[in-house]
Image (tube, rainbow, N blue to C red; front, top):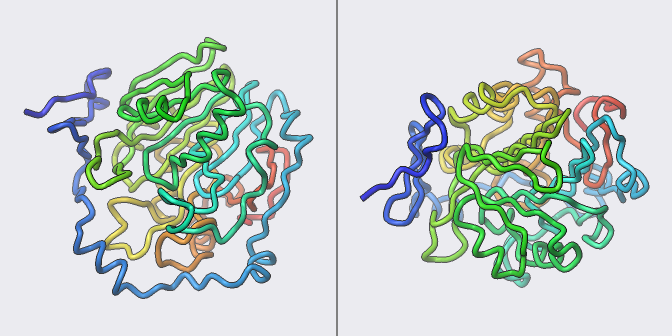
Length: 350
């Protein structure tokens, strides 16, 4: 017996999100769950074109900067300040808020620090060096987005002063780690931030899936997030393939002052297209949600797929030029760079 769980909105925003036999299903047209055969072909047959050089060459081409901690601790009151920590982990400061997305400060995106995808670019700072954080949003349960060690360290440092927002089905995992202030939402569900009632968070749709062990596939929901302040707004796409949900998000909640949108981990396309957007599709999301400014994330940190390690950045630039979209409106940053949108100069996509 299937139970519809998305009942908070009507008409075009009531996506037929379904919880069937205790597992969530994607409602999007053409979605197919990654097959075992596709996974085996990806792992054992697909040619690896990533061509990641040694650390000395990486330091020149993809540098990691030490954040300007004075700027982090004194963000501008009327602008958006953003720092890319790496992968999908972004520190966003606006309207008196400091928001952290999908924190991963560990060396490996894995259930163990002995095996699994390892960073080829180091973290720009430690958790103990971060400014005070008000909100953490989690997109889904995959190890490169929900990292046990990072969650644990953040909880030790900030405790109940830190508000966690997670998709439906993830709260119990968070409380097991020790997190106290956890809010769990389903798609289109809204919550008011208790410490500032002018701040609203919304869990919004995307196309992905969840898994942490052999038996828990899609028992938790995946999602994107909106953090809407009194003056400015932030959209975090999380980890996603392209779907019609982004147009719906743009119509209901757009435009957004700033968005963090994935641009990497997309090849081979026949296997990854139902899981991750490529740069062309990332630009479509930027347009669909009506983002005024976007940062390209989910690249340049872990080797997860087979495209060249710099291709997400170059393909993003190409697509923006093809669509006559200003390069400065959808940019990338070096790891650790503290950037004020509209104030700090960007010489194109870096």
